[in-house]
Length: 389
Ligand SMILES: Cc1ncc(COP(=O)(O)O)c(C=O)c1O
Image (cartoon, rainbow, N blue to C red; front, side, top):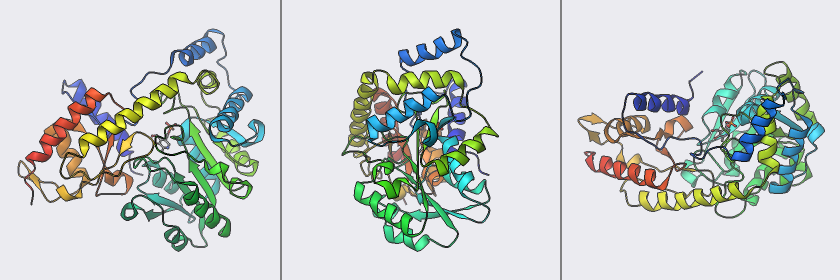
């Protein structure tokens, strides 16, 4: 199994920083904001009041209720906290539980690319096969015909990520309905990773769970407090779906990690049910950064961006710069490009190859406007120094 490329990059950046190198980190997969104070206080209170023991493997009833509340309030969907919601150690474990529960060795799971780095590895971890469906040549929109063509009698599920990491693409209701129809025809489960569902800047977000009863009956919606509430380290996520899917996933978790950290569950209850003003303010700030990043990148010849509608990443095509050389060294793909950017510009970006799309790089705007400016200045200078073929 390959190491997570994003975590590996993060480790490299930390190492360089410890050695005193000034790096602008466009690799960030998490907001620069702190966890909101009321949420931290709820966690502290839980510790002081000794609410620190095991909970039910599927989570505290109040934590599952808080997820039920969020899904209804923000996405207009109805899930029953008692039977249809499982609390996990972050979205990552929710997806892992779903994949492990659905696929046996030799089964196939459809994964549109660019994909979030862990999907293919999680599918492989149960001996199943990730079947990649490219969207790079269709502006990151999923072509239903390609989905149909990829289905065999071993296909069990499709993993959809909207808003997408790394592209920021958000699927429209029509696009989701096309996938729902295919899933129904071929008896597939949809694993809908909606971790960035509250971070949408253009148009409205539609949850896969909101498409109607037929789609809902074959969908596991994945979410977490990680990104929305700057709580990546607390490890609190969830899966919501019909009890036929959530039940086995809970049993699997009961024999692996048991419940998500109890203290984090109390903090997440506050995050999901408390005042949302600060969270909404942060989403507005992300949108401002997005616009700024896009305006600045548009001026670099060689960075071709499709404007992202959600999450906090831009995924420019940089293929036009491949074949160039810097200090005599050839840039022959996204990995070489990212390595050269780190070495020569002291800017961390994630190579597209980690997401199955070598013509691109991922640039995060989960950092301040000043840092964005500093980093883009460096990138522009770096690109200017590339000796183009
Ligand atoms: C699309 C996507 N899904 C899932 C995760 C994992 O989230 P968590 O930290 O809650 O496990 C991430 C985190 O980077 C992500 O970007």
